[in-house]
Structures are given as structure tokens and as C-alpha cells.
Length: 309
View 1 (cartoon, helix red, strand yellow):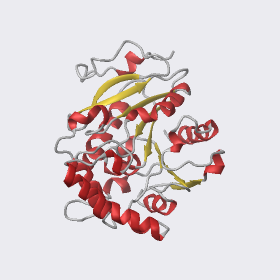
View 2 (tube, helix red, strand yellow; view 1 turned 45 degrees about the horizontal axis):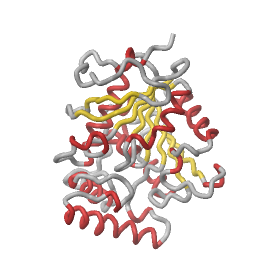
View 3 (cartoon, one colour; view 1 turned 180 degrees about the vertical axis):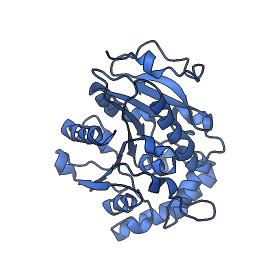
View 4 (cartoon, helix red, strand yellow; view 1 turned 30 degrees about the vertical axis):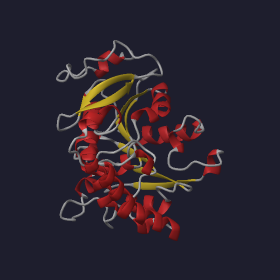
């Protein structure tokens, strides 16, 4: 028997935080709630009840500055195919904007993403758990000390955003200037990073400046002393598939391949061209749009079901 949303979402130890849940989700819409990050910050989230026989739990980790609502069409698709799905906003953006004071970007991985995985792992029904990361939502997995609870990870447009990974001179120059000049300058001038600079929501200063600092370093994710943060990447030995989109100016295939070498287990890189999906342009955001041909989502879901255990 399929469990109702109220049965698999209610926390035995966090009921007050999640008290806004309605008794049952309306199909296709999900239920808005609050979940705890690992350090106790309340994050805005949406949970989608599986329709039909439940077989997989999925956490969708969004891109930098992209609110969870962007992933609604894909989350609803997964729910319609028997997946329990959680989307959420990192602190400082979307419905979690009030939790961004003093935050750094590493909090998104160490506390927020880790909290989302922990929340989804411990609630019934006890399903195999998979993680899907878009852009930053892929490499932030490597900062979560509990990432191994996800039996497989699918990453779309996730990359090492160091300028030398861009294949063209123009791409190198734009990326270098963005991380060395534009993001630090705009953040210090405005007191935050305006969303217009990179196409997402505005970012709190600590998050924006750490993102730029990391991206200026050839090892990207580094601690305050400049030492690479790789421990939890190496510990993740479950299957990883990284999807590189050929016309993605924010995550060109060489930058995606660079990230693929950080994980401790089996990884594969799949390069996707817009014409492969019957579109003129796909870019950094197209894979999650509602007009993405369903056969490609179908194939990704089959991969997750095969590998998440």
C-alpha cells in the first residue's frame, strides 16, 4: 500500500518545525515545509509524494542562487514515476533567505545539503536514496560528510569552475574576469551579489565571496589555508554520472570532466548536445525545464534505479 504524504514526511523529533504540512499533498504540487540543516537552521523545502508504488527517494540539490521552484517540473515527473522527492532552498536564497546572515558557501554543502540527505534518509518509507545535483548542487555533495547515504548521484552541469578549464580564450577571459573582478567588486559595492550578475537570485556577501575565492584557485574547493577539501569526495565510492552539455557556457565539458576525477568510485561523463534532444539550445538550465524530452529523463531515472541501493 502506498504511504500517504503525512506518514512519510512527519518527523518524530522535528514535528514543530514541520507543523505547516497539510494532511495530504495535492498531486503535482508537493507540500511546502521546513527541514533542519545539520546546524539547526530551518530550510524551506517542498516534498513530493510518490504516485503509484514507491521505489526511490530523491533529493534535488539546486544550482547557485536557483530557488527550488525551478525544479518543480522534474520533481513532479519523478513523483509520477514512484519517487519520493525533496527540493529545498539553501540558506540565504528563496524561502531560506532569512537564514543567510553570516553564511559562507561551504555551509550549503556541510550543513544544508547534508541536512537534506539526512532528512530524506530517516523518514519512512525506507527507500533507496539517490541525489541529483545541478551545477553547484553536484560539487557541494563533496562537502557533506554523510553523502554516502545516497546510493547514486546524477549531476547536471556540475563542474570545477576554474578559468583554465574553459576551452576557448574568450571563455577563459570571461570566467577569469567574473571571479577575480565582477563578483568581488559587485558584492562589496552592493553589500550582496545582485542576481543579475550571474542569472540567479541575489546572494549574501559571505556566500558570493567564498564562491569567487574558490573559483580563483586551481584546486577550487579549499579551506581557509588553501588546502583542498577532498576527504568526502574520496569517501564517496557510489556510482556518479555527470552530464555535460555541449553549449553550456557555465560548465563546459572539460570543466565537468575535471570534477569527475575527484570522486572515489565509479564515475562516467555523458556529453549531451542540443540536437540529441531535438532542441536548438540546451545550455546550463535546459535539462530541468518542462519542455525537456521525457525520454532523457526516463533514461536518467532508469540509471538511478539501477545504481541506488
